Image (cartoon, rainbow, N blue to C red; front, side, top):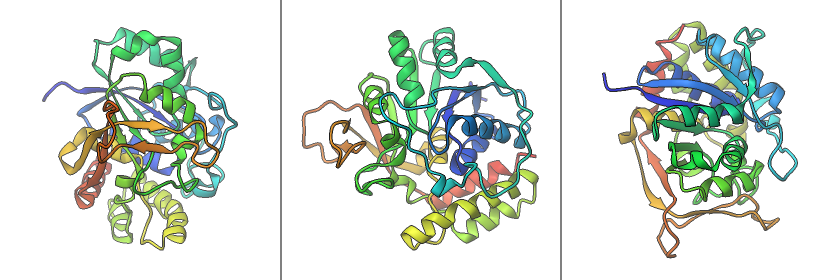
Amino acid sequence: MASRQKLIIDTDPGQDDAVAMLLAFASPELDILGITTVAGNVPLALTQENARKICDLAGCVDMPVFAGADEPLARRLVTAEHVHGSTGLDGPVLPPPTTPLQEAHAVDFLIDTIRSEDNGSVTIAPIGPLTNIAMALRKAPDIAERIGQIVMMGGGYFEGGNITPAAEFNIYVDPQAAAEVFAAGVPITMMPLDVTHKAMTTAARTAAIRAIGSKTAIAVADMLEFYERFDEEKYGSDGGPLHDPCTIAWMLEPEIFSGRHCNVEIETGSDLTMGMTVVDWWQVTDRPHNAFVVGDLDADAFFRLITDRLARLP
């Protein structure tokens, strides 16, 4: 087997974050060095607890989990209980976590790990607001050239926004952090709403996960059935978009996605379009490319991958 890809998942669970974590845990191609948590979908006290519950669910109780930023760099925290429920993981009833919370701060773990691992060997997958990543780059600018890549979920262009007309939630929560990360010169793959809105959990896809019959699969199906109700009401769709697992799926099977290298700038000055990701998809400016922006995926292959991998978990 080829050498395993070293990965840190930076997350704010969230049901779709949970599926992303489980997909990673079930994939031997990935060497998960740790989970860092950030305030986003729900406050930090819940995101760190939820991340540990997901480690428990997958039988990964030795996974190091770190709590990070509890508020954005320069704004008040905006959360999304209206989508994810009061706990952030509404749907199944998960017991209190036994996976311990590490004492170190997530930002210090990020810095220390990137400095200690081989240059360019670590991928970071941020699937929440980019606060921890920006704080790490501020505190230790030397790590920018050591990070192998950032594979992140956030933004939208043709799909507009999902928290305001112009902005996707993860970017809107901390646009200043996003602007700093996109300007840092680290290779970025961006999974915007344009692709994640094509990764729809239909009733049949959720039923296929439930049919696995394991404790983990049933919990995931319960999560998805709770989580998708918001998008079904909003978009009139059969199911909801599974945003965050697109990052992990891209690391495992990039051939099921397509996109192009673009310049991406983050709006931080306008009340009307705060947090908008301005993607030069049509290459109409001479601004340098700073991200590979994904625009499409094979949804059937994506859900086959998730279902196959979830079947490996307890």
